[in-house]
Amino acid sequence: MSCGICGSRCRGRLCRECELMERLDDEHEWRSDDVNDDLDEEDGVDRGDGVATDGGEVESGSSRGAFETVAECLGISLDTLYRRLAHETPSNPREWESPVPGAQAAAGADEMHVNLNVEPTTAQGGIGAELSDRVNQLYVEATTETVIFEVAEEFQTVSFSTTFTPEQAEAIGVALIAGSKRAADGNPGVIVRKYNLASIDRGEGIETDGGRGQDEPLKVIENGTAYYYEDVDEPVRHEGRIEIFDHYVRLCGGPLATWIPRENVQQVIEG
Amino acid sequence: MTYQSPVHSLAGETEVEFQCGVAAGTDHCDHEPETIELDEPAYIDAEGMVFLPGRPLDCPECGNPHDFRFNGVGVFFQ
Image (cartoon, rainbow over the protein chains, first blue to last red):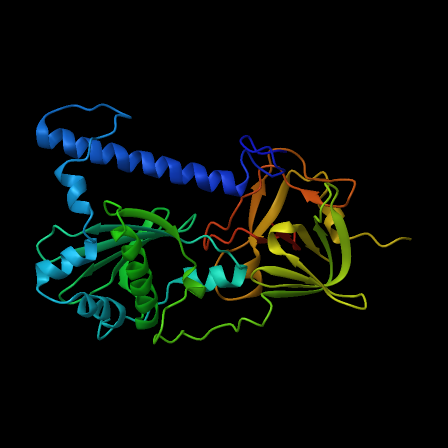
């Protein structure tokens, strides 16, 4: 089966890359519609779908960084705001751990999306983020006074609220900061970025939360078959010991092990 | 008698037991094995790769998109 957009080999209607791009495009379209609706409400002029605005006060205001605006509203320095977001976490977090980072790390998945929406105009300065992979929806909200990370996680029809552990909150805080910096660079305040919370670079001075070492494979298959592509269309077959890492697959058995980028490996079968 | 990979037992099946490979190998995911119906019978191509039309693209519990078990056979997709 081939992808309906790019034509590459895949197992569904679209390949993963095209499916992700389609999702991002859809989301961008929804947000553009929301912005247009808001502008229509403000000035009573219906711009219709797909009609770009001409800038004006809204866009000229966006040239200033969103976080600068938040810090100014609160009367604190930008450094203080960043420090609070990165380090202040709930004093007594409930004992709960999201399964998402661990599961993503175990699977070697790199598909965590961070959809960051900075709203510098709220009274206290609020920062909200929706993080999602293909299944789980995490909603994170931080106020700059107390920096509380509220998380709602939905597993299809089941939903509940809880709090991140300090380590997870730190990771998200850093993701928020990194995303916000990008948002401040001439973007009105909405960005879409990918992060893998399990291996996120937390920045200088923030320790990682341990977990699996980078040198250890995700999975070792003692006797398996791997199919991968080199420069030709036909897949190359390898039989024997196979070690799967975050970004590479190590094929053992010959005099020298072969490292293959994960994206070139089509399939690995155990047994 | 020549050895045949266990993946060949999947050929022709339209109903298979599906489980997240993360759940099968670690405690990071709670996905329980479930029986799924494929859109078309599973098949093995000339190279030996298995194809399961209509299989879930990711784990319904943890979202893992790579590592799965089908009738107990571990298959790691791109």
